[in-house]
Length: 293
Image (tube, rainbow, N blue to C red; front, top):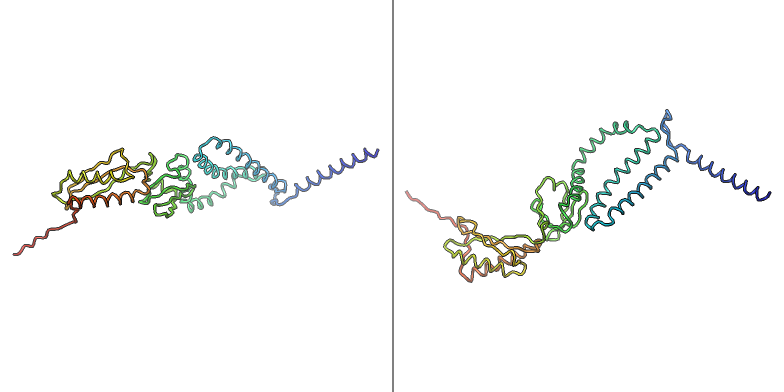
């Protein structure tokens, strides 16, 4: 009998706990005048549970998808995925509100004007984000690439949804809004590989031995440690200038980010070789004829 009494007491206690919990979750936090929309503690708990479950599922999907992706592709996918999951959270929230009688169509219609105003105000921001998604998906630019945009050159350090961060050869940081990739011509110096073709131009005086000039220019380029043997350096006779015969020496280097130092060294060597061989680099001249009447 005593054991049966204890069992009955336990059942009664459990029933009381369940009833208390049901009463708790049914506590009304908000209701409209017509009582068509009622927000209870149970609804709030349901929304929180939905967000937690959605987050767990999204994390699981991300791990499965990125498990075998290369490091660069994994970082790009995570960035785009982080942006997309907010839309999923909004959808979950709208579905939750629809379960308590909220007219979602009315909410969307009422907020349309506000969304248009916000969209116009944040037009550039949205352009940056959309451009960032395109960059990450079509792999136009990678971390480590050397790019030139609007006359500025930098090595890409980080690609985000809104901006790209690059470092110049002077160790200055460029913060590039991503929409500039869609509205400007982008030069990716290293997309086809690290080697790039560079040039140095020089003019010599009329009457100079052009074959000797060609020989000296090739000698100056080939002597530099950063210039590749293949493709071989090439000298072009580009023009008959107003005051000079114009030449261009083209050569290939692998460190295009610091190529200005290589070009400077080659110019020093050209000047030395020209002086040793009596090749003159002219300056602009004008002949003035005075006519007396």
